[in-house]
Length: 161
Image (tube, rainbow, N blue to C red; front, top):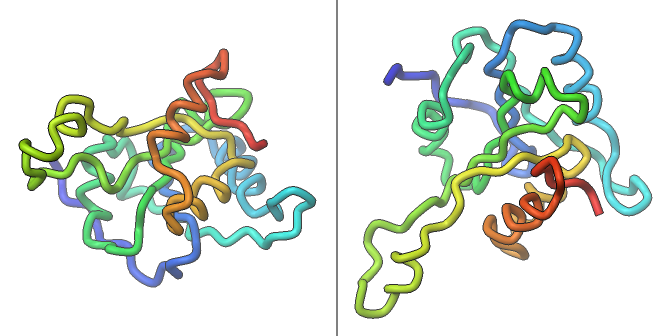
């Protein structure tokens, strides 16, 4: 596994978006434009994103992305613009769970959590990225709940409410 650069200068309130596909510049610009749109029920919130657009990340696998951003203690989710994102009509980003499985859980008390590990990823529409990021950052909603909601969509994509 290659070593990717550490992300620096990210505002903890900004959703981290990492581009890993460099085959379609037009699609990338469309995704980026969607991500900076105001969000919320009536568009009352300003979109805050930290876009990583550096070819060093080209074709990075989810495990490589997670390893590279794991030092950011304020990060609960990272969003990836990969080949699926740029090739799909809805530009669904890959949301990766930063908290993953807890390795130090005592099986005597946490057997249920150990037996059914948290989902690691799901797809989300750009318009839902900010809701996911905000709610996970505040621990209002668990990653599992968003993953489950995405699984109920016919295309497996979390869409804004």
